[in-house]
Length: 320
Length: 103
Image (cartoon, each protein chain N blue to C red):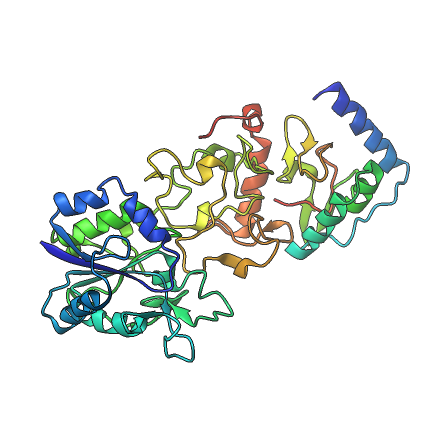
């Protein structure tokens, strides 16, 4: 039996919605098949008011063991570092996070807000938000860069806006079944099993990427979304086209550019008008190249690939 | 390539060869410059105006060491010889060029 506590800070509940839609395994499977005891969750917990406060105090004191501490949303520090804008059970949420992180065997940040601050931490960051162990790309965050949970691991970051439900439940199951030590994390503490490949890996528009045929408007059945519509699939680490959403699709398969939501800089360009869904260019070349590609090589490859593109690449083609 | 495309392509060629004044420079080097030109195109439906605003030429323009020909532009459809930037949406030739070129 592994005790799990899930709390929300500055959050929209999107990751909770995602979690509750998990299928492999489902949220119910966690309890029935994998021995996870959900101590409390904002949408599932039974305790209210003083009863919840007593439970949290018991966890902090060690009276109740907490094996997995899942946090969703940012740690809100406003105003002036007090955290009073986000109170929970009689005190600032950030104080609960500080106390609970000390007694957690594993600490898991779910979603962009909990991992690196996400949209709330975008400048000017009025809520003084930060992630558990990162603020955007800067290591540290609320818990500090040296934090490790009782298991000796740093915060396990499962980013995304929201995180895919199966990323959440599969990591929770790995931890609950004693395989937490097998997790390998990348430089941003994301499980490598999910975040080594790119969103583009498995994208059904890859042939259009190869032949440099661009989608120029939403809803087109042909064309790559990277060249004009701001898709960040070639430089975003996620398995969105390997572990499909709702088992059937992904943003790019549906004609929606990847927004790069598993990367620390999300949302890119600070949401300035005209920057979302539009590939940024410098002298006619994409400002952000596919990971590992340089500008000179890109231009040569593009010219050659375009010249060699077959006619069918310019026709409508089912890519869903 | 359709007859309709051919006719319009010939019209464009005649206009440009006949001395239609076009804004070849400045090239759209930054995102803001691209947006400004695209915004002007969206407000102008007339073919001559669009050719002028986009800075069409019958030969490639070399800018900052890069030859900006239609045939290497991301909006160019190779087999139809067509520019599918929604704000332009015109038949072109591989060696033509405009300042919204992008790769």
